[in-house]
Length: 480
Ligand SMILES: Nc1ncnc2c1ncn2[C@@H]1O[C@H](COP(=O)(O)OP(=O)(O)OP(=O)(O)O)[C@@H](O)[C@H]1O
Ligand SMILES: [Mg+2]
Image (cartoon, rainbow, N blue to C red; front, top):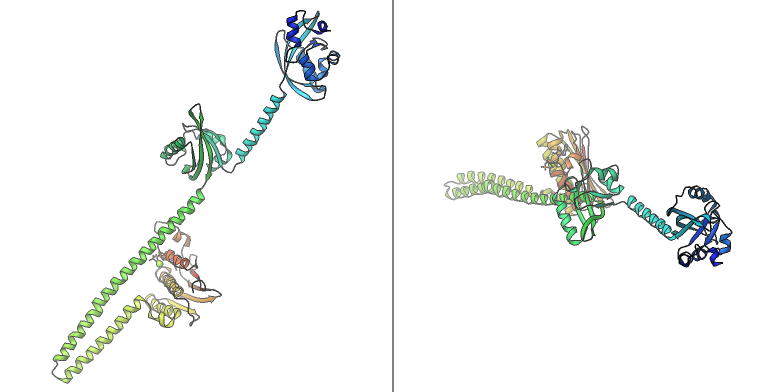
């Protein structure tokens, strides 16, 4: 039996064939009939030697592979030839992938072919699993909301995903990688940031939350926040890889907050300097007017002391009484300038009415002020309403070129609302309030600040030649 199936008469060859751990067989080069199979083939495929020898090489493969097998088999050159990867069927029906190497031989006087089989099923399955895992990873990267990238130390993109391309204003990652080839020059708005980034990431091995301003394709900029790590290859920095998110909106909001804080400070400074000015004015008026008047009264009193006749005394006393009355009026006026006296005695509405009357006479404007006259509010609410309405009316007088202004004070549930409406020229509210505007004034901002300090809000509505309406609403309960 042995000699019958073995490859060659030499015992060495018999050993090489029969005991070879690789499945091997010999087939007839024309009929493909199995002429000999080794132990490994029998073990691996599950067919007995008899079963093998009753089959041809076409019987151990899926039917659809047979034509390709025959086509290949007829073109194999003589000599040892790897013929690639094929599918074979085991006896139990399972299909395996095998790498086959053949060489033509003469076997028992027949033109035959020796085949050496290597089962690569597992390797192929692993490769497929790897490909699938890679595809999943790629999909994850490609559909990530964050930008994902790999960059070289010399400042080129080695990889970028669609999000990063979008964030930087490119149509595709390919376009980004092709056009942005010098990160220091083309990517960083401040080139030195690249150096800072590299120093950080190369010292620490990673950097989390690195924030910087980057150019988009069209030359505008975005604020980015990056998390990056260094990948080494045999001791050298191979590349940086990481993610970035677009934090432009958050950055703008922060800048806005900062601006408001600065404005508040400015306002405070202005309030303080206004107080200083007020003191200076009051001091000057007390000195120039009241002081002068009192000095004149002193001189008059001395004259009375020195007077010879009662008629002289009478005349002097009369003049002194007039002077004193005048001085009393002056002192009242100075005091009113500090705080409208009507405010304390009568309340908000009469104080506003008096202010309106003064404005009306000095600016040739009709000012109507209406509301619930007797109503009192917490002192800080009254002061805030008074100052806001005063500023709004001053603006009407100074800027609106209006015929008339209406002020309405209404109480409504837990709030009090003051509306100041004029029929003047109107203005561009957005432009006047734009934080970026260089000629930004503080009147309107101050009104808003005052309202928000008490938890209220201020609305300004204006249209060219349709006049302006300023509405302020303040909560009463919470501030009472
Ligand atoms: N009722 C109004 N009618 C027309 N324009 C107005 C009116 N109120 C405000 N404006 C416009 O809005 C601008 C800003 O007003 P704002 O009160 O902030 O500043 P201002 O009055 O110019 O200066 P100030 O800081 O001394 O108040 C004004 O310069 C004016 O152009
Ligand atoms: Mg103003």
